[in-house]
Image (cartoon, rainbow, N blue to C red; front, side, top):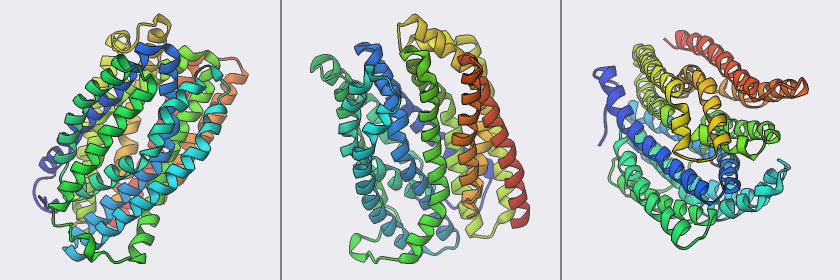
Length: 437
């Protein structure tokens, strides 16, 4: 399967790529929600541990996710240039790079994560957090392998394969979580085992699908290409830092939420899980935008880039409106599906109603980042990430804590940070796009 995204109706391409990706990531979020539900059946401490684990572990995965997005851009541009040999060479070098990156990140995680967890200063769920993370860290290669292989499939317009395997593993994860948590009573460690088994299946299936595409020429044809690795690092570093800072930003928020109690930390974790469900369509649009822009940039069909961007933002804002209305009306109900703790439900509803508004800003951020990656101009992503995920939250949340403001002020401040980042990326992206055209 190879879709030529340099020809045909942009709206049709957007829907053809985004809808399967949305469905796939929706089931991936259901996968995470399942883990949250079973952690909640154990105890509030385990629920808080899973929330903390998500932010800490995502810091490692973020680097791989950013690099995988660079793979989509590089291979997409090669296909747009009609250079199949270059696309195949990039594919093999990217896979080998993914394996090496996995080893480095796994070792780094095993050494550093205990210190990151301990830095939050709440020992009540320290043990449960490490019980979950330690098994996961040994399976990093399966997560990263899945990201890179899916990035290769995205570059040729195949978002259906990832959708199909995520639907299967979402249901498998329900069964495995039940067996490991309820039957074998492994606690949060059982949730980790279930996740690793599912990731092994995901990576194996995606590798099988890549082997059946024009991108695959066989490992016997692998030749190390320093130019490709250099370009991968050049284009992958900014989005990697962006994703890493998103994860680190979650950690920073958790740090400032922790003084409000473990219920607040658990609520933040649940709120993010629910919010992710409504952001999945935006992620799908981001994937579609990157693939379409990359191929058209490679083909020098620059006049198709701006319409792609505007279509994606239009659809994204329509989705955001549906999400915001749902949070206003049903926030408590959504939270009650994952916990019976009344205080956690109240805190989750507050988070959703206030932070849900930021989805409009996220649409702009995601689409302009995808566009800048597609035209090989991702450098600005790094400083914007530093501002949005680290500098601004630390300054804003520290001031709020100093003056004794409550947790509501944190969520309002978070909205302001996201919207200011979106406005700047819109201005900068339009400037670069005009120069390109």
